[in-house]
Length: 207
Image (tube, rainbow, N blue to C red; front, side, top):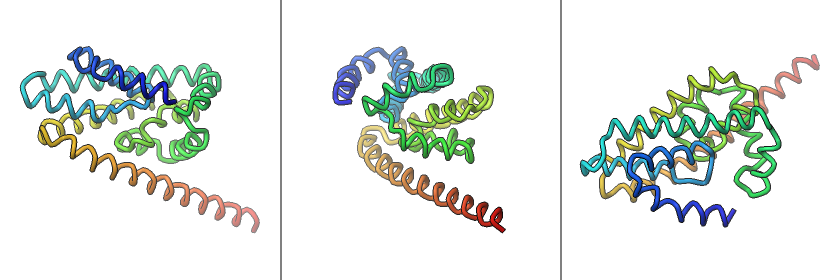
């Protein structure tokens, strides 16, 4: 994992210098579920738009397309090869079996929420595509939710970078911390609801 993080950090500056192709590459990496700061990159590109160094619509479209490309690659790899893809990711600690199981539970019950507003939650976003493939969600359904989610997610972070400009780094710290705690609370609440319903179901069947 440490090697991967070093590799990610070493290529970030190179990606930024690529301009529009860098937007696409960055969002593909984010879509692949790598430990990559996709929201920070989008905010940075939003700042570049505010400085009139890039076109906002182009960044938005290219970023959304790149993200959709990344998640589609992962979706089909997991759907076709299953544990052959997941086991190496478990070993290098990019994925956790327990977290994937929890996200899969959420996906079965709340798939629109996981794939649209869930894109804003770091702990869910990185696992949602794996979970969708893992629970055999139809690709058409996955595509519909993901397109909406990626467009909203990319547009929001680009907009935040545009409006907050040089203060975007401070914004990122506060927002990411809040989103991390929100992810934990949502997952715990969803699991609590799931457990309660299972217990109620067993009680009814026992009667």
